Length: 234
Image (cartoon, rainbow, N blue to C red; front, side):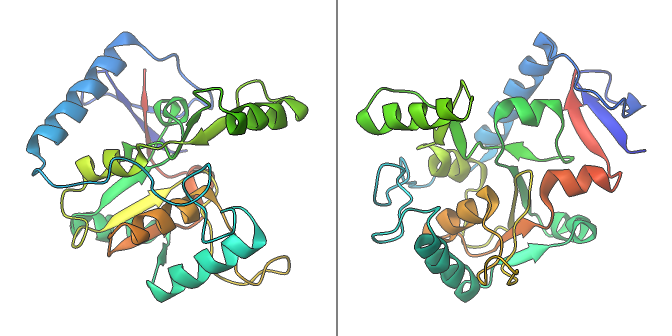
């Protein structure tokens, strides 16, 4: 069973995974805020984009294609192959961390606080729907039709928040992960591979000047299924 380092407890405290999500304490939130402040203070200043600048309501359209459409994914996959996107196996992660890689958990903050890869930082790629534009109303209705009360939309500050974490995007290795992972290997359902939030986020990073981007194979679900160590907030 995986070891779980509980952030907010005594640093040496390590416990066995209990198979449930812990309550998030005020201490955990304070610790996380302090960690973020320290990392940001240590980062060199740089000119960064304020928000995702792509086409369409999501800011991620690929030309005339929506990012989740077959045409959009086909163009994304081609660009990711051309940029030599790496699909990183879990056992390779210690090696890239030694090279100074930044591990980025792009899942919602709530998921991150319930459990994440050791030393990963949280920069959500999606956020709860914030406004009431016609597009956002339509998106809310779409989620409601599937019984989902709180829909999500792309976090427009994703890039600017990530540039704060990675002041040297041209040289710093970045590994992103969501729950599912992603792949450029053809499947029986899609010759372009498996599109996931990690893959779309990787496309956004590469399009914005990041030169050494990887996606964690299998994502968080495979990582925990293999019994690997995680961190969580108490």
